[in-house]
Image (cartoon, rainbow, N blue to C red; front, top):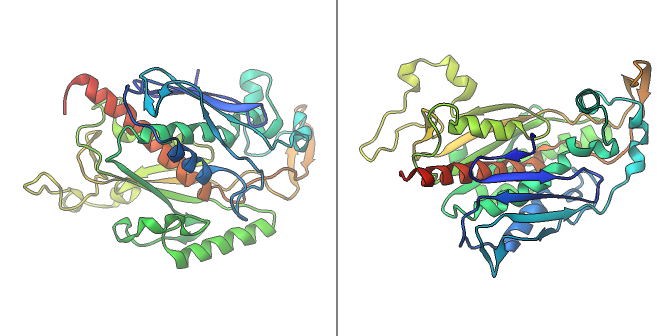
Length: 354
């Protein structure tokens, strides 16, 4: 329960942060889809730890081993199994967690739900799980090669990108370690993260994602709305605190006469405050949304907390952690977008419409 995403295209994952490996089974991929394994590995390189001075220094190659479902570069229509070995665990850093709960982590809630938990790196609650999603998302993206998915860091702390995404050069996203396509703002973001890191503190931020060339007609009209499916996927990512698409919360301040997207004769719209989704179904315009990430809960400074027995305790900082998750969250947001679109595309194809 709770380990599977999707309905027609289903991803089921396994693994703990400090276990032998992460992995998953992607079931429902049609036969005959050409798969570029190097593209999958390239996506993993963007998410992997230890890639810059502003990320955790855990060293993992994150090599994806494709075990089944692909032969001679094409999908067989059978389940695609994959595994990602864990190689750089330092489980001793977490021995204190046997008896002490970390503030704003899943330690207490996992104990209440299961009565037992893997304290090493947070076990299954660790963001290490997202390695599985990136691998599966990179496979699924090859089902819809005409669709482009671009995510970027749009804020860190109180430093924001204020330009609309239409004016951005997405080729610059990976030109800096914070993955912001505006170099001058990226430098400010990097500096802010470095300052927080030196102080043993952390920062939150937002990731904006733009989906282009999504065919009109994807999504279900009631409980399977496209924006609801995207929200479910994004809110499943560790540290996510909010999701908005199109005009989002700003739209609540507008009048209908300002907000309506008027049609052109080719069925495109003159504005796109709907964010490419109307009635829960894609309309062919760009789909864009923003995901908010909280500051990382693990601080490199002592924190007051409680033990499992309810006694006051002081948690001493240990381990290797990101001072800000948003740079590494970019490929995760992209992967989850691809998984949602792939699933809804196959649903639509089964219905024989569009």
